[in-house]
Image (cartoon, rainbow, N blue to C red; front, side, top):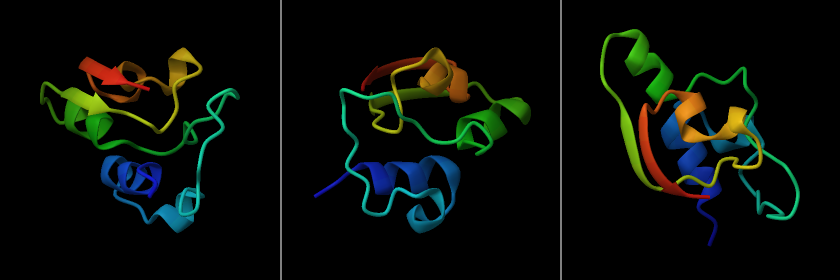
Amino acid sequence: PLCSPTRSALYTGRYPIRLGTSAFNPDWGKPWGLDRGEAFIGELMQDAGFVTGLFGKWHVGCHTNDSLPIARGFGKARTAC
């Protein structure tokens, strides 16, 4: 019933339990987001020379600029937090 565990695993390649998102239902009124130390697939792909983009729901952090898709390696992003 939650999308954050799957999205966090897809974007980082790590198990949700290791990210702390396995039973994670964010309180949308409070700041939250995945740790900045986690490498996202978008960042790794940009480092390898690819142009990246993301369309759709994000749901792994959206209260600060550091947790938005553009800051996490997705150069062109159209998302809903």
